[in-house]
Length: 130
Image (cartoon, rainbow, N blue to C red; front, side, top):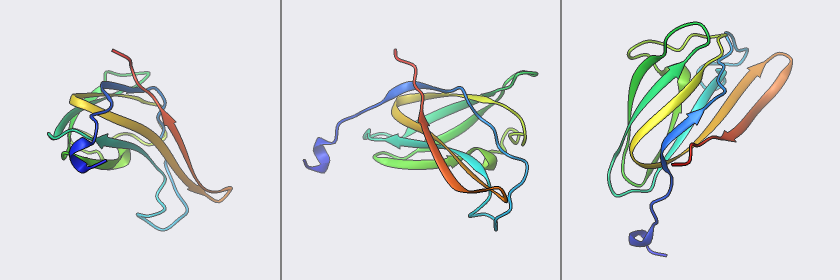
């Protein structure tokens, strides 16, 4: 398969119903900071413009956070690095909704590091079929 034959895959709407960023970590920053990540794949020939909304149990959603993924590229976006229009609070349950103008693939991962556990990466996939 040549690069010209790369198929466009994915959906334009993705939901990640589970989210939680621990308030502390025991490893050196930034590599071992506990975090959650949206791994985004764009196989299209055009940039993906993505609006993210973050939902909470006790308040209105935060966002939209604006993210761009270049054509035929991937972006590993740490939720704890989002800060415009606001930061995602630590030690708080949340969910996220990603709305893209082109099809993308999204995988959610959590990276935790504390004194009781070793490093782990737990992937999960969530999507809304249209």
